[in-house]
Amino acid sequence: MKLKKPKFWDLKKPNLLSYLLLPFTIPIILSNILINFLTKTKTKSQKIKSICIGNIYIGGTGKTPTTIKLYEILNDLGFKVCVGKKFYDSQKDEQILIQKRTKLFLDRDRKKIIDEAINDNNEMIIFDDGLQEKKIDYNLKFVCFDKENWIGNGFLIPSGPLRENLNSLKKYDAIFFKQIDEKKIDNEIIDKIKEINPQIKIFYSKYILKNIEDFNLKKKYFIFSGIGDSNSFKKLLLKYNFDITDEIHYPDHFNYQQNDLDTIVKKAKINQAEIITTEKDFIKISNLNHYNISSVKLDLKISDEKNLLNFIKSKLYA
Image 1: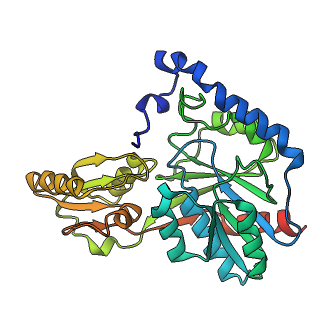
Image 2 (image 1 turned 180 degrees about the vertical axis):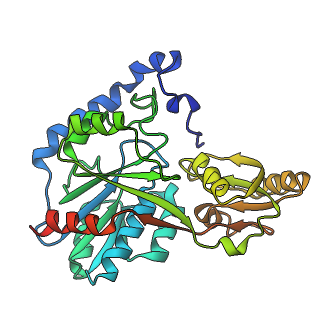
């Protein structure tokens, strides 16, 4: 059974429950110690350049859209580039979404993915996730954050939303901040990041709704989603002036059943509203009777794209 992300994870300060759960963070601490210990034994391929787009905060940081966008940018520039993703049965929705827009290699072993990419004559591979990989290293490592959630309460799983503590930023090359609005990141956050890693680069991205013309903004809408950060989906729609009457949040990678959709349709009828979900969720319901449910199609815009490309080239080809 999949569980929703606990709300207390994203409180500005840890609450009592966070402190009570601290003993259960020990396996994560030990795993991170092991990863750091194995750093010297990690291998980096000499036959292909590698980039990893990952996170230390669980869910909703935009790493998959960032991976897709970076692939599209580099592919358009003529690089022989592909995407690698470790196969998980629970993440087929993401895998299908990536496969629709990139050249994707899937396997349960990232080393095998690299070998396949090399055999296909690619010069560059972008991994969606994998910063905590124990066997291989990358030429360039990006950490993704949601600007609003940042690091939540700052604690490790299950006391908080972090896979690694913030000091792990010293190991990484750059940060992507996903944002809904155009406001700059709090200076205290930037100062904290630079205190840990003065050399780290910071880039910003935002979602663009590509199919706004498919929707009548005079109508009411009922929304549902099973993604890492459902609140960001709602906030994006509100930014585009959708009239949202109600919503249902499901756990990330939720496996929808027909009764779930029947419930959604009933609630939407009560609200006299049209139904919208995300593109990723729409993939999950494609084999069910999904009535007249629509999905939004998003694109990611990276600010200062030229600076990003110069940074990538300097790290990979210097």
